[in-house]
Image 1 (cartoon, rainbow, N blue to C red):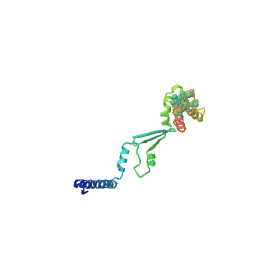
Image 2: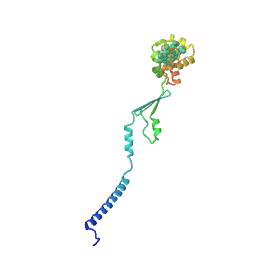
Image 3: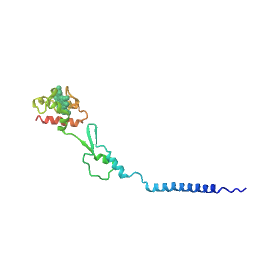
Image 4: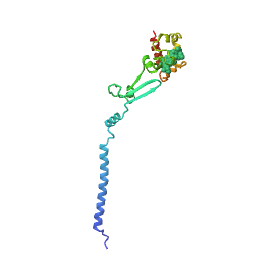
Length: 174
Ligand code: HEC
């Protein structure tokens, strides 16, 4: 009896072999094409997406100074800068002047004489206060004095700005 294989089995085995070679070949071809064309996420697209989801504004109160960072705030024309430097150029430090502090923190009481507060620009109210000397007025504004709350209750404002508000009120009595 010959050991000759059935021609069908022979053909079938050959076919399976060829298909396996073809499959391996396709896998290799696929990975070669992928490595040639895939250069990672598009940098422009990532940047555009980041700018679309960027918050409109950021506000942080640190130690009495108001930092406003906003895409609505005019910014320097775009130039090649480090990310941190770009962040800093978008931040605007708001420092109030005496009038600004007064209108923010003091006018509620000193505008009307509420609770016995010496009224703004009222000579008679301020005369005995002024007699104590400016340093006492600064001190009482910063630490509080009877019905006068320390810093008018605006504890986050820096001492300098409170003094500016005192100067502003004192100037109005002259
Ligand atoms: C909640 C009300 C209130 C606010 C807000 C307020 N004050 Fe007064 N302030 C008073 C009152 C009341 C007095 C009078 C206190 C007294 O003599 O009994 C006073 C007194 C003063 C005096 C005179 C102190 C003295 O020694 O005679 C100064 C100066 C002053 N305030 C500054 C300020 C400044 C600056 C601000 C804002 C940063 C401010 N105050 C906000 C109520 C207020």
